[in-house]
Image (cartoon, rainbow, N blue to C red; front, side, top):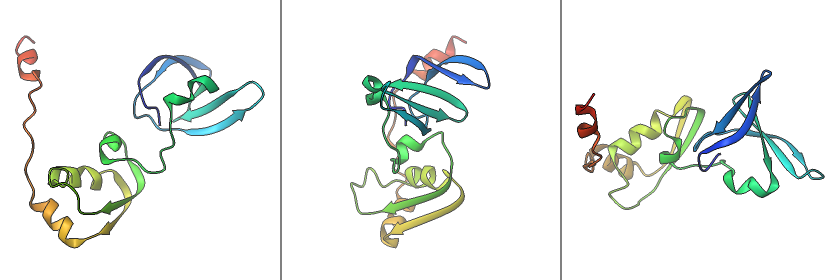
Amino acid sequence: MQMKNNYDIEWEQNGNIGNGIFNGEMGTIIKINNISEYVEVNFDGKIARYEFSELDQIEHSYAITVHKSQGSEFDVVIMPVVRSAPMLLTRNLLYTAITRAKKLLIIIGSQDVINFMIKNTDAKVRNTGLEFKMEGI
């Protein structure tokens, strides 16, 4: 998973060249060259090359948080549900996690915690300034 926006990294897809791999994009390592010290990653057909010195931009994504999964879908989602801070156990978080699964969702954990999440509609107010910005459009 790409951990921060990189507008400069070059990728190739079907003979076309482009730039930019962005925060949250997930790919598969397809080549590691220990002699020339680079790794190639396939991001949905876009092949990007990372020098070993750039590998801090990506990390394994065997397991990711619900927040990092937003905007993505997966064939199978395994969601552990455990007691945590009530502000994290919200209906919105549960909904987001459930809707990431395309084919199969497996929830592991306490039915009591799931019930709490369903009932917890406490959404935090976000002061983004978006409404103010939209008024000018």
